[in-house]
Image 1 (tube, each protein chain N blue to C red):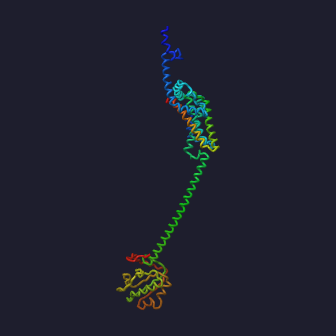
Image 2 (image 1 turned 90 degrees about the horizontal axis):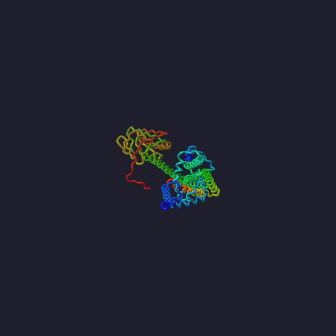
Image 3 (image 1 turned 135 degrees about the horizontal axis):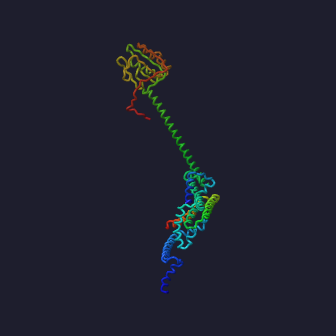
Length: 110
Length: 322
């Protein structure tokens, strides 16, 4: 419950306060958000499976974000930033979908 | 002893591992439930196996978030069924009575960060221009496209400017032609007597008390004036033009069918220094008229207004040949 509240508060604060994002991190924000979404879905599935561990969640969340941003950064440096970020989004999207399928089976049993 | 045993024996395999403390009926029931559910779970597993298996493989191959479950495919079918039962309950439990635990707080913090990023990204995507988040190569491409577009528009502007200049020139020419036409119309109107005219000239007044002045004398006067360069002439209130005719009439002269009586007042536009001597030459108009007992007065003026008009009649037969 607290976690859901955290998400809601984050969205509301983001919409109301309108913080300025430094130009350096700006290109990596969308990828980082998708990576974080992937981690969150993984965590939700783990919770439904009963093997949720907060330490693992924190590590996976942070490492997902950092690795995704790193890949995009590297891609930008190599000149294939657009293609690489597309690849990252595709991979993360597949993982999100598989996790969502597992969650669906838990919640709806179907 | 042996007779009660056989009924128990078949139970043993099915109730295998079942605690002896439990009554047989409940144990049997739970077992039956379990098997039914296991069959169901089995069917589900088969249905989702292909997608699930591939997804799982990918998940394990990639950078695995440690929170990724691993028990689903590896565990026994009974266990999967139990977890499906309890997963939902766990979700409800963790949702409703809100518990302030370390895990909840940490997850809340991370989700807060996620929500923040999500909101910022959505806002910057929807509010500011798409250029904000664009990467360098995209920006270069967009810039190139804009340059091309600018070039095309410049070309088009140049073309349209040329066109406009051309049109203005031609319309200027048309305007000039129209002005010239109007000017010509005025000049011709002065000759034809359809417009009033003004300018320097003379007035010639012939006062005839005896009725001796006849049409041919006035005609002589008109001819003399024309020969001296008169440009517009009117006698009393009749305009004299190319087609003007004079005839004698009772007590005066008929000019263009309109009767004109003494005093005959000529208004003539032309060069006064030419007109006056032309009338006064010896044996000329003035002397001839004076011989007929008429009084003649010639006066120069800086401004003579010839305002008697004739209607512009369209010729019935003559047509311009050009």
